[in-house]
Length: 300
Image 1: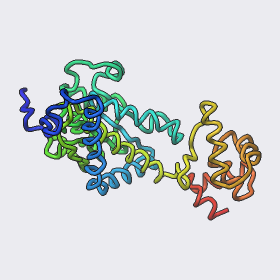
Image 2: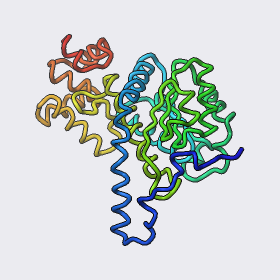
Image 3: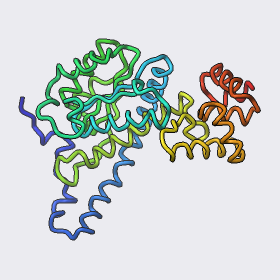
């Protein structure tokens, strides 16, 4: 199958960088920086679509479903990056947010030839994780035409699941298949076709919004604090103490005592301090209010 690259927005040449190889290093970087500044503005018109995806992901997680990212190359790696950072940041279980990449684990670290053109493998990879209508699929591809991702999307549709895409080509086949298409147009890359640049940055920013927004919606952020953060190292143990102190305006000793009493669970410690409850009482109150701190405090 031949591909006319000239028709792909992400493959066009950028006149602003036509002479970039003749510039001084600082001038070269200024061109790259100028182009990068266009990315957030390209995303702004798609905030309503991103909001739809956030709400669907939050509802899926609350109903026992999952957020599944799927892509190839840079796009697939970005999905894996976002998924892998959810457990330590938000205390999610590893299976709640999953990143799949064409070529499997090997492709995370190095290029695997031809795998992105395997449409059947996209469907097979979803079947392997028992993808169902309870899950949300977000397809990732700068070009909006990756066969591996399209195969996964088509399979997800047969399961009656919600399907979204993040792409930089609003005219790609993926956009036609998706329930919601997030397709910021970032323009041609500084190095022609190198979609790890602006297109990759755009996808990263959108994925930040999807996962962070969904986690806020399911109660894993109180004020602007990551109250489900897991203490897996010394820095994060200290962060837990700081979070409890900032959320409650209590002393360091009080925060440490509350965290020790509840098994280092920030949410429980915060409710203990603010509502003057024991660890068991705070834990029960939170459970009765689905893990939402504000709601729990209103019923204390």
